[in-house]
Amino acid sequence: MKNEAYYQAYLSHNQISRRGLLRRLFTVSESIKVKNQPPRPPFAAREDLFLTACIGCGECVFACPCPNGLIQLEQNRAELEIDYAPCDLCGKCAKVCPTHALDPNFTADTFLRPQFSSDCLIKQQISCTDCQTLCPQQAISPDLTVNNECCNGCGECKIACFANAITLK
Image 1 (cartoon, rainbow, N blue to C red):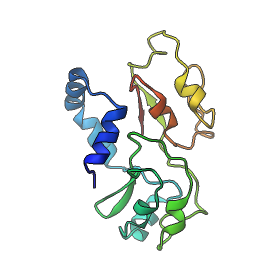
Image 2: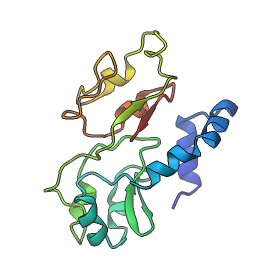
Image 3: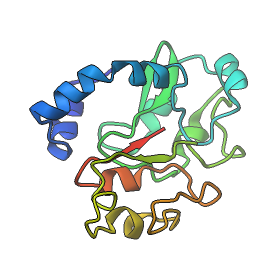
């Protein structure tokens, strides 16, 4: 559940302008499409297996070391929400999962990849290398091409972008 502490942490990192609020209102269909395939925590089983195995116990939620937790339960299934802090893929969520819907033997990848909006300074021909230099995997090239083999979906690039031009999909 998202509580007041979650929203305070989110708003301390993200500023919401009137233009951004209106833009989000008019792009609802895009967010609905993403909702059909919710982002899973790292070390998650294949989606069909995950849906069968995850019982919504919440052990992964409590094990996440992020202060307000990156893992939330939605419809009794674990979902990853990288809104204000990146996932360091520590594996604590996988170690405590009693049903092995999350397991350390599965891939340490969230399968989220950065998408760069037109607000990106590089796309506006302005010099910025924050997402590239802060990416621990060095998966983002200067022309904003993402190396999917290197990227693990940690979200560090999204958090680093002060222009809020990166979404993870």
